[in-house]
Image (tube, rainbow, N blue to C red; front, top):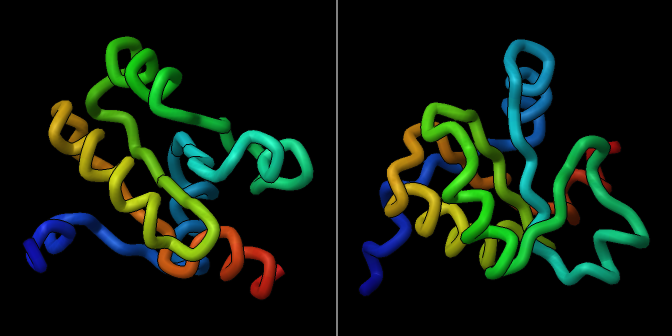
Length: 104
């Protein structure tokens, strides 16, 4: 079970900023809705298990997707679900929203 997250691409803030500048990226905020409403990374979409299932069925499998949560841990579950659903360019933000806030 310890190897569950090994295939997930981890990116840092600088890598994320570069990706956002150079290509179309979907940012998925997997934090609680109330926290998303208070503050989030510009352009991010709030998601939960219901909206994630809808996203999986509607989104282009070749989309570049960056997931983030509070610290970059629980968002790995979302990354794994996306990868299992056939998405090829899925990234997890190391340190999550907390790292984003510290870097801003």
